[in-house]
Length: 274
Image 1 (cartoon, rainbow, N blue to C red):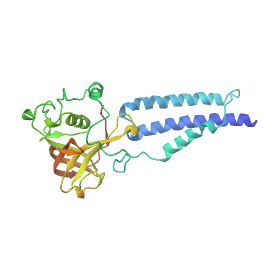
Image 2: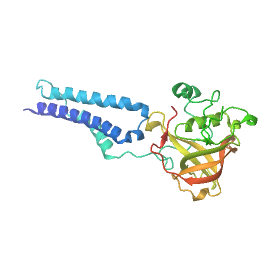
Image 3: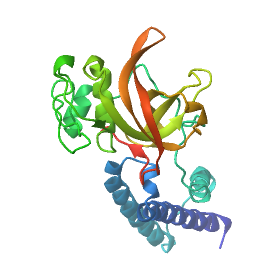
Image 4: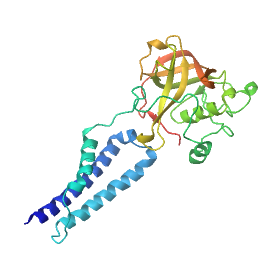
């Protein structure tokens, strides 16, 4: 067998190994649940389809391998794919950490990136014009988010995994309607000595629109005299009353904290706008 034939066979073998390796990585990520650290749940069907397609293509290349008349180049064009596959298996999936800068600091002056139309059309979530599904502590639905202060509904505005972004979006869209409202939310502690006072922290969550590449930190500023005792990235449940504060000329929401309790991290630490 001459060198060209050996190079051609090696190229085909490596292609089959790469395709099966990536397909196996997708399948293992799906079975272990680590896929949620990489992509939005709505992308999972596409990953399943991709794994099936890669196995099918690997089968095609295998039949080419047993056909001596097919010629391929060497493995040099495949080196980048080999490196990517090795890195995928070598480095375990990890949750992003805003405190270490992997997802950036929270944008406290706005909730950007997702429009009102995106929320209403893609998920049916409430917007300032039609929000009417906020959940209170007693399980009731207090009413529209954009009602005047004088008619503001009673009850605690509870943030959970499903309504976290929608609640946050509506607060920023119609802040006056929420001033004085009792709120309760769970998040991880974000601190920034350069931007926040010693009695301030942000109760944060990581927002994923599509995949880990677009991860961003969102949350509400909290003021609490004992904030200095909180460890960055620790998960806490915050209860307090919503107020406003001026930051760099912008009026933003702030929670005047009544209590902070230690909380367990949720099974899926990210939230999704739709």
